[in-house]
Length: 120
Image (cartoon, rainbow, N blue to C red; front, side, top):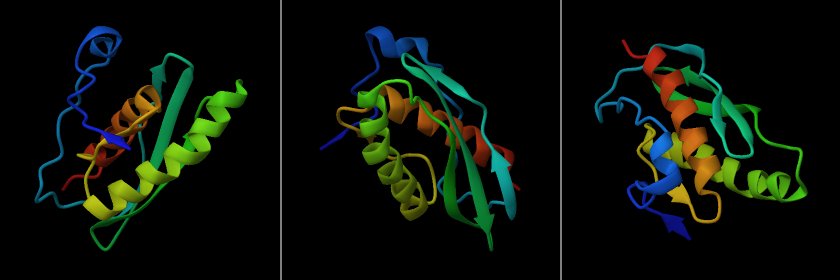
């Protein structure tokens, strides 16, 4: 089940800064772009975006929490889903994964940072 990104706007989640949004008609420069590591409750998440022919081709996970079995399980399910959603949407305006809200927010913030660097 997906959770709207606006549903987590209060409480603990307000400690995350809201990144600048990528415009719907964004033009990306080809290359590999690394997002900043984003700290969430269980550790850091950092991603790298690959842009080819002006389109988001893939997102690699460089860093994610691995010290807890639950974190490894959640990340093994949620992170590939988020990567697919970003590639399909061609931006980071996608929903959080229910049950992985903190990881989703950190992943999307890091991906957003990487893609902002690639804007023409």
